[in-house]
Length: 98
Image (tube, rainbow, N blue to C red; front, side):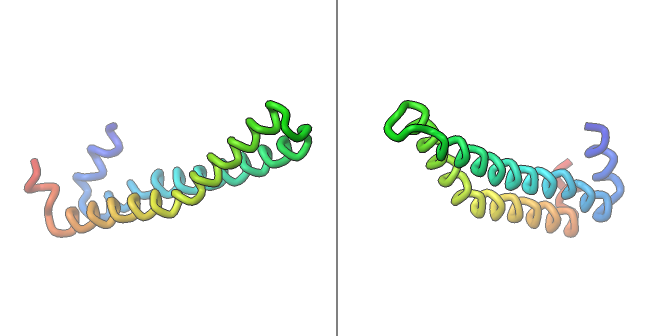
């Protein structure tokens, strides 16, 4: 928490470094989703058709596909929040809010 408190006092340049954890989180989210779907697909291919494990892995793949479809929306919301934060910092919104 100290990092965020000090970075807002440094002005606009300090706030830019707050984007790094957000960008890393989005990248990790995409990698986990990709590799998780790949592993689930391998498990699904090894199962006997119409078994419980086959159906469970099929449902998991459907859920991962839905999440992958929503990833663009999630990234757009994050980018919008970051842009709004940068605009507020650039125009002095943080100092007026305190």
